[in-house]
Amino acid sequence: MPIKYEVIGGGGDFPSGEDVLRGIVRGMNRLTKSQQAEMQKYPPQRPGNPYIRTGTLLRSWSSETTRQGNRVIGEIGSNRNIAPYNTRVQGFDSQRALWAEGAGWPGADDLGDNVQRLLLPTIQFAINEVYRKDGL
Image (tube, rainbow, N blue to C red):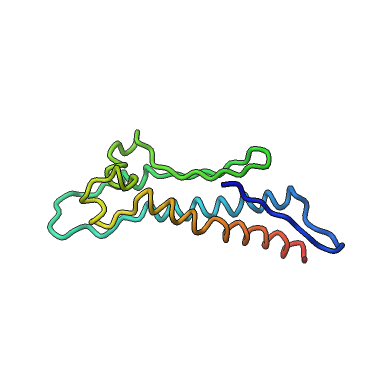
């Protein structure tokens, strides 16, 4: 989903497009890191479950923000090479084992919903930060 912004003002100095893009990168980076942290949260273990958690699923999550020209791309994902079972626990609803949803694990659908809900306010906040820094 492309983000478009337009600055309309009557005179005065405005931050450069480059400054605004750097602000968007900072905002996107905050968003991807915060959502990675949400996916890394383990729900309470069910009473009587003898499985000993190793933290492997937590370590499988990563995030990255990159910029390609005027495009800012945020990626959040779980590495199957680290946790081959990741989709059974935290994949999309169609991939998950039934026990995983009932156990309170956040899934990829939850991640998508959160990013969709938070993306525009995060970018707006980041752009506002650039303007406040410049005293506008």
